[in-house]
Amino acid sequence: MASNIKSMTAGKPAKLIFAFALPLMIGNVFQQLYTVVDTMVVGQILGVNALAALGASDWLNWMMLGIVQGFAQGFSILMAQEFGAGNMQRLKKVVGNAIVLSAISAVVLLVLGEAVALPVLRLLQTPEDIIGQSLLYLRIMFAGIPIVMAYNLLASILRALGDGKTPLHAMILAAVINIILDLVFVMGFGWGIAGAAVATVIAQFSSSIFCYIHIRKIDILTLSREDYALSGELDKKLVFLGLPMAFQNAIISVGGMIVQSVVNGFGVTFIAGFTATNKLYGVLEVAATSYGYAMITYVGQNLGGGYIDRIRKGMRAALGIALLTSAVIAAGMLIFGHQILGCFISGSPEEAEKTMYVAYHYLAIMSVFLPVLYILHVVRSALQGMGDTVLPMVSGVAEFAMRTGTAILLPLLIGEEGIFYAEIMAWVGADVILVCSYFVRMKKYPT
Image (cartoon, rainbow, N blue to C red; front, side, top):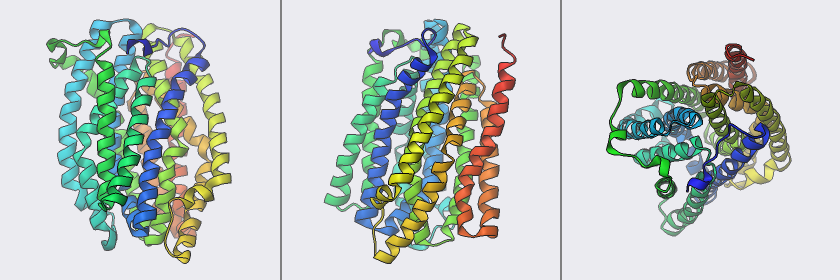
């Protein structure tokens, strides 16, 4: 649907960025909706142990998803730059090569994921009474990696061309399908945690098909056989953009797994409460990731067109919008957090009370520091839009160091509560590197 394609090289930056981010935001809300429904169904229908099993598998699952998203987003940077420069022939070659590289990456990740699932769960000291369910969930999710790669690449192609609406419609479709299938597979068929995983994979498949149908309607993306032929220099550039972003997400999730291993030592009730809040993490950052996608496209297109001053104006506008949004979301979570978390938690009154205490305490801490996370997403995405994926990767290493250091050391000093600050310190460490990197980078461009 070519009418959804939009150039971001002309017009008011704030309006363009918000208008681009809004459909992504709504789409992310629907994506989080089916993640939340998964958690609600598992927690309420299958109980605390199943909820803990879902949490124990979270970071390994997120690592694979993060690697997939890293490659797709990295490839889309060059697409946005070529589109902004008006070089459509080169754009087609970039898209064709990105498709081939994505297919290869998906196969490698599928095999790798299935091979490491059990050893990693054991390494994380996953309790024996939940490890079987965690492994089953991961086996099914990893089998769907090619589908996840397809959706992320197709959605990234559309976003690179300024189309944020089609991925929104795809995500709404996926959310509806996932919710229906959750109820059918888990409640109706009694498939347990496997039913939640199968529902998610089928939903993602539907969203990828939806995006593919719409891309086929875009004339400038009508590819020939030659566009799929791998080109050495082009592929090096694509890998150079995608690999640091994939590594960045991987190293962040490794830190998360180390945190999870510490959490696993606190018992099933603590794991369940920690998981309940982690499932709201996506809701907390739903607007942040949307502004991030918007900045990658906005900065990429304007850099391709040579409009450097617009990048500076866009950054100021995006930060203002992001900070305001984070304050609103934080207030909502602090006020309604108990009611929202209550949807995930079941069990005996004593179990529910202990789980709720852990969950809300963690949620309140993250909400207060939410603006730090929003700055991270905006600045990191701006750097990536400029084609710099190395310094954002370095910020990911800083996140890893701060997250793991805090998770290992702070609980020794102040007890279980110390683990709640691991995420906050990770955001702070990344922000210091990203903000400094942005100012250094912008000094290289004429004012």
